[in-house]
Structures are given as structure tokens and as C-alpha cells.
Image (cartoon, rainbow, N blue to C red; front, side):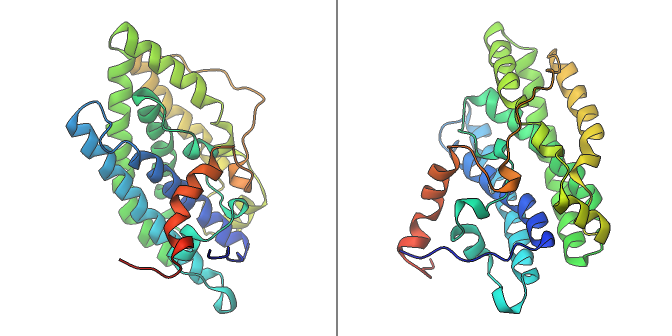
Length: 259
């Protein structure tokens, strides 16, 4: 069994991994919809969104490995598959179980809206590689937001059953919203260096865009709660270990294996 790598936890590396890991883990969850979506077209759409997120994760993990330094540089596969749980920095919302279709499209909308706002700001990053990644990823995030947001509106403004499911998903997912905008030293360092914005700066525009979607769906914006998830800090829910066991099985069982 392949041992876990030792991660260089510099602020710039952690900042990029927060984004890359969120994309990677959410892509894994979306992949679980393959063959299970309510209609064939949506089955294909979910898979395509997952592939877009994998592409974004690959680009960010590759660059994060380069920023680690020559003494401890890791490639995208090592960072994706050979870290221990505490060395992943994705948002907790991305690792939650698949849920029903309402849960899936609402989660996609919430994360895609955040990523769209992030990519918009990262296009002006002081790191030219990050700016180049953002230029392509922004187009994908806009589509993801529009596609998933359209479904949220259809479900919220649909049948009594679809509305009930949308309302339930909103109550469940909103608990994990505050983590997106928690401010810490990693954000401070990224903002000071020009690498990227502090995520806390995105809270107001994120709420404005989410409010537009929810208003169109006839859904009320839930109140904030005292609960705080901590995936960005490497402290995850009970679901993370299971998803990593599945993600990492082949690479750890057959070190260095390629297709």
C-alpha cells in the first residue's frame, strides 16, 4: 500500500488546494450520478460538469505542486490520490453524500456561484499561471451556474413534491454556507501577495446572486446558524474518509500505475 505524501503547507499552496480540492471532491460526487440522473440529458450534463471540475482541479493541483518547491514538489496525481485526509482543504459542502436530485443541483448552484466569482477575481492574479487557468475556468463555471440554477428554479416553482425537496435541500445545504466565507491567515496571505481574493470578500456578491435564483424559485433565503464546518482547515465530516477510500484505492494499491 502506497504511503501518504508529506505536503508542503505554504499559504499559497493551501490557497490553491482549497479551490482545487473543492473541484476534485465535488467532481467525484457528481460522478456518482452517472446512470442515475432522472433523464438521459441530465445524466450527460452531470458527467460533463464533473469532467470540467476535474480539469480545473488538475490545473490547480499541478501548479500547487510546482509552488511546493524543488525539495518537495508533487505532481497532480500524488496530490489528488496520496494525501492524508487532513491534507485536503475542500469545502465540506463538496464532500456531503450525493443526496437526491434537488440536493445535487442546489449544491452545484451554490458552489458554481462561488467558483465563478473566484475565477473572475483570479483572472487578475499576480500569478500568471493562475490567471491563465481562471480565464478558461470562468467560462465553465458560468455554464455550471446557469445550468444548475435553472433546475433550482424549475424544482422550486414546480410540483408540490419538487418544491418540498428543494426546500429540504436548501435547509440542509445552507448550514455549510458560512464556511465558504470564513476569513483566516491563508486568505490574508493570498490577498496581500495578489495571488487571489480573500473569500470573505465574495460573500455579498454571492448572496446577491443566490438570492436572485432563490427568488425566481420562490424559495426563501434561510437564516444563518451558529454551526461552522471546517473542511477548508483540513477537519472534515465523517463522509470524507469514505470518498477518499474510493478515490485513492487504485493508486495506493498499484503505486505508479497508469492506464
